[in-house]
Length: 389
Image 1 (cartoon, rainbow, N blue to C red):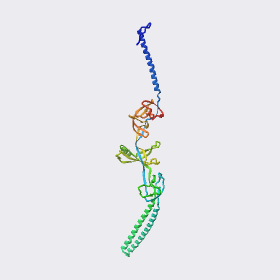
Image 2 (cartoon, rainbow, N blue to C red):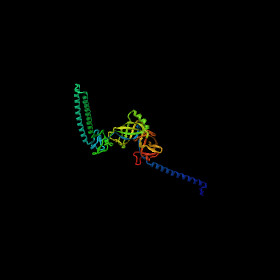
Image 3 (cartoon, helix red, strand yellow):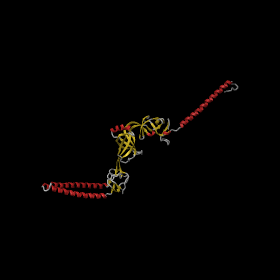
Image 4 (tube, rainbow, N blue to C red):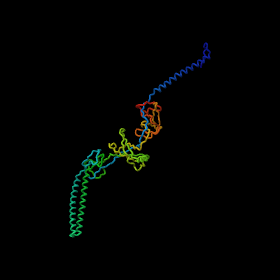
């Protein structure tokens, strides 16, 4: 409220108007000054916020194989439980546990002295019975001549001929016993039936081996080639049968070490029934395994390639993030601003994610540094900082 002041040469009304206009001008000046200062501070703050360092990768369009992923179990191509075929004491074990052995290589030797003696006895019996056979045949021949001249009766000749046939049978039996004795002597030396790796020796030298015992002497696994068994959902069975009919399907084993290349093989078997308890179908791949990288009993990641998908949109898998609304990536525009983009990932293949919607060829996606980003964040393309994801 303005109070009129008595001033020489000015009326109270004019002084009141002058005082009100002055206050308005002062208020406008102050508002302009402080508003300009606030805007300058805001611009300075906005200008001073640093860009987030990130790494980016281009969205590519290329041919990608369509693969089915599964967990597989390695199985030996052949497994042999070596057992003794004769009774006897083990005198030597000619291998180191776990070593590679060749077909025909000597594994065990059983004390052969009893079987050598049995062989000599069988040889003597065979010679004796062979001589008796020859004598009986000679006698039968002479009696045949006498019978032809009617010097002996038919009954006497029949008896001589029966004796000759009996001697022949006895000689054959002795020969069979001789061959059996030779076999038993051979069985005293136990050889490897295949190329493979021996396990733990279950009987050491000095122990008594029993013929066809329940427990084997050692187990041998053949690993070149080798099998990998795995299972896929029954929903994929029609596709597998379709592409398998067109040609052999490639199977790959992915080892835990990312620096190790994939091991290539071929699908050779599809089971004839779906397992109703799991809803899966059992498959088998065959691998050459020349370097013995696969070992029986090992669990591995298996990839079954069905076909090649042309013009697939792919990005590095590490660019894909997952949030409450699904999967998304940060896309960097030409203005060096990263923004959130929802995408649909069709499947993953190793270090790549195949995207069916949300991205286009040539765009840039953030692969490192996502933890510091938000909607419309300025970025600096380069090596991501320690905080990067």
